[in-house]
Image (cartoon, rainbow over all chains, first blue to last red; front, side, top):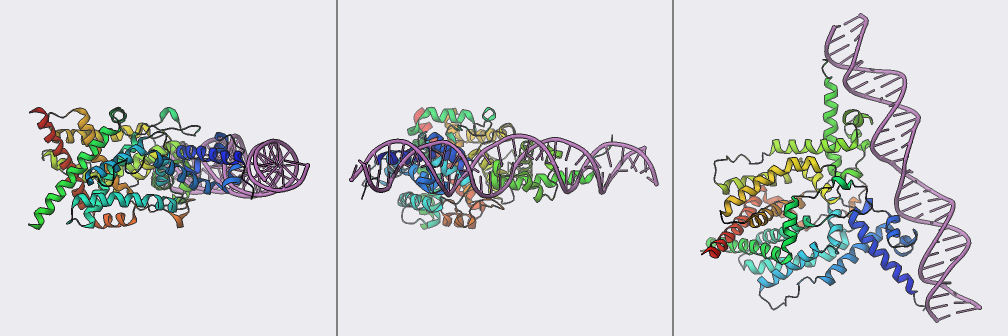
Length: 230
Length: 230
DNA sequence: GACTAATTAAATTGCGTGTTTAAATTAAAA
DNA sequence: TTTTAATTTAAACACGCAATTTAATTAGTC
């Protein structure tokens, strides 16, 4: 068995890197194989040679960004499994928000464009990767809500926490290298002032806020639960 | 001065209607003038005759969906200006969530796609329309937080409430008439079970939940504020 | 130096898109 | 009814790019 040539591995890697950025910036349809190869300094035929098709490259690129961002920002943010549930939830929230706000992590950019303009090509790979994380989130919320909580309550609370985290997605600065978009009129989505303030606060302060709201909401739920029982 | 012919007004209207749906389903780039005209049962030249260009039609269609959804779901949901702040906030939240969840209102579909894949063509029209609503939201939150609240706190709290409302956007069933998308593998974004549960709950229950979390969070903020002062 | 993985340029194949024009049609005004 | 201009229409225009394949070449590896 002959070893694969090392330059081939390199090119493959550069293609993944470039594809992540191009897909994140333009979405599947507006991204072109030509642009990806150009950015990777590879020949136009490289995508089909290494990945078979643009479609497969898309899925591979997503997986790549997912693994990259999770290596950099572990899902528990280093909080040990023995810590109290509140701290573990804080870790999960901080990890999620870091992954969203890190300008070098293009994973959420791709997800966001895929949600808005679905190709369906990421369904399987996304489900496999994300479901465990969601389950973890839910179990933490469930623990904090206590035994009396119904499944519906858990869903609602988990959803609220999640939504607040995802809200900061709109703080990301848009990038549009080589896109057809009209950069001059480009929307700073939402209120530019809000974005500015949030970014200057730093991740930790945002996490503190989300946790304050989340814990207050969950506590209120517990109170109602206790009232209903007695 | 000669009156405009009524059949012309009708065609224009049908074009707006069709454009709303096509743009909402496919986004600006993937939407074609041909598809819009076909849906409106108008000739291919109709868009340029009535709107000058695809770009202008895009902006007009957005404005159209905005006005339509706001006629159907007024921004205060009928809560009078004399009601206590808590009730007015509830009205604003309910109005927003109705607008998002109403399957006939395509306004948020267009916004969502524009955010994910910006053309910049809606910047002005969106800012003009949305800014007053945001200001209203903020002033309600500010009132509930009380006098001691800093601008940053108001922003954070308003943001949280808003994020939770926007979270239900992912409950919308995707539509993709005639799109290139691969319907079979189409992602039911997020957890399908969650969507199902939420939709079966109805808007009012979801509003109650968002308000429970929001008010609990705001109350907690006030508590900290009081503690800091004393 | 033989083998084959990797690269390359060029060809293949395929499909549209937004917009304009000029002629035909139609509804309303005179 | 005639006039008139708004509307509709079909066809043409003009611009353009996309993903993939092939066959020849280059360059590591054994």
